[in-house]
Image 1 (spheres, each protein chain N blue to C red):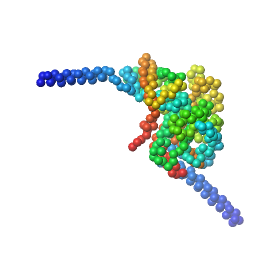
Image 2: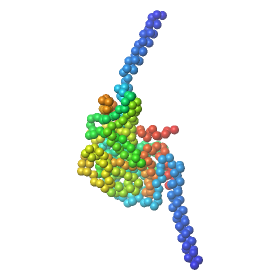
Image 3: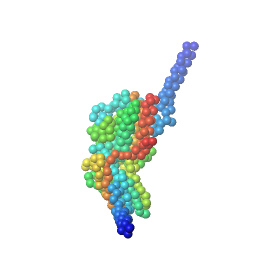
Image 4: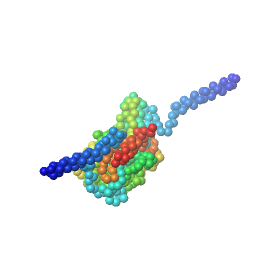
Length: 164
Length: 227
């Protein structure tokens, strides 16, 4: 009886320990987390093999109590990388280069087609569908985040695409 | 005297018939508006498609005949566009698949005309446009011919270069590009409407960007049924 209780107690303690260890080292494949900034769903729109520019998109969450700015992005194999925002000005789609992207305290910024995006200009080689591209993102609070953006088709319209 | 009166009456009756006929044509499409989810009727029977001669992505002549005898979805793009144009082309590709899946009565040809003939040669367009759908037709050629169509469709574009201080400068339509523009790059701000063209070359409707594919398909079917 006592032995049984001991075993159960041991199992319980062991399982709590295991859970705590897991929580301390979260391993989420698509989430890049340094607690202050969380980046999810980073992707590059699959493009023609001769595309002169590619769009990079993601969702950036700022978990701090300070406003932060994304100031630059870097990856190998492109002539230039710029921060851009597409703005619809009375039907005229304007692509406006940005010095930074603001993410408000405890806020989020969704980089998506037709809106904020990172422009990868002059690729040495246009990546194939399914490839993962390592990108480093610099923020004005001194932190750098690494994301692995997957190359896939855009799904922008699927969101509006009512299926009922 | 009575012959003269008869003549006048005949002319008046004829005018009324003509007026009714014309109004009726307009009415047919305009009256669809309450049933249309996203399409904007653009039909104007007095506005004839200008004569144009361009090149398709195989460098064959693409002129007014290219829009005859079948329905077309026509849009203006440029390949250095990282966001809006690929979004439009991807959406239209999805729309085409949807229409095929629904076995729609009409699957329009898709014609993508470049705003940027300088960089988008037929060869460039061939690789680019086929990525979205193998049946899409890329069109390039003489910029003046392109500009004439841009104007006719009510589209608009402007080229933007960055000066030495990295400040954007919007060029006027006839301003030449600086010598280093190709090397330094330039972007194009532009409207992003997709146009539905009937088999007799009339622009019946325009679809603004951010269209829902199912709504767009329904609108196309409705307009086609009323053609």
